[in-house]
Image (cartoon, rainbow, N blue to C red; front, side, top):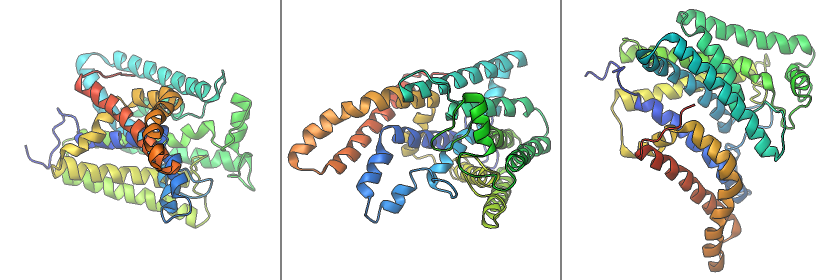
Length: 367
């Protein structure tokens, strides 16, 4: 088969790698790497790099701010592939039932995770899985429409976000803790988030999942690979520049914590460009080195390993690892900061090996 066309009967390895890399970074945080590496890097030339592994406190953009948009975008890209596969085995109603069930489970898991974080029953809706449940529903509801209509609806969601925030507080619409998003949180949950995250982030970030769906549909089309890449690069660069311009020109600040329009555009543009890079390098040029499977296997059980890392992993495996890392390395005089980084890497390896084992045994937990 010519590399200029996509064999739609096969999985896109580039998508598997992109999803797996994103999940690998998420479970690395749960393993304690980000926090411990930051402690080790403090006061050194690595401190700037360590900052990129944490969310920006407010107006700005760091690497870690891109992980959730990547996650939500990748889910969108995979939806047309999943739908095509399920339609081959059943009717559209079965697909719809599957989507509804999946969104219910994601919502439930997201709520339950906050109970685990708090060690008590709480009603909090800030988790990425809760957000994803809503964005999937929105994207699925319109994915049969023409691409231009889907993109128009995504733009309308961003305009709606602008209108809601500016109408609620015309003088200072994007302030900390007193924005429209915070007001909705008080209405729905009776509380606001100490980090200023807001529940209605799913309205603008639904654009990420919608754009992912459109990209997935383009990948499944019979277009030449060069045409697909051209479209991705043009649209990716276009909305990235638009998002950056809105921030630089003081139209709308780039704030990940309340998913402002400028942030949604810029992060979405980067997600599309990263997909284009992976697709070009892996599926078009044929670079499929074995080491890439380090990441792809993590994506085969993405929701499972995320839930595992955020619950059992955080609460038990970090302490389990310290039995060995501290026990073996402390007696030889290795500094504690280094021990903790090594411990995080050990825990990360355990997480990764679990996904590798499940993949080898063809055990996949589907949501």
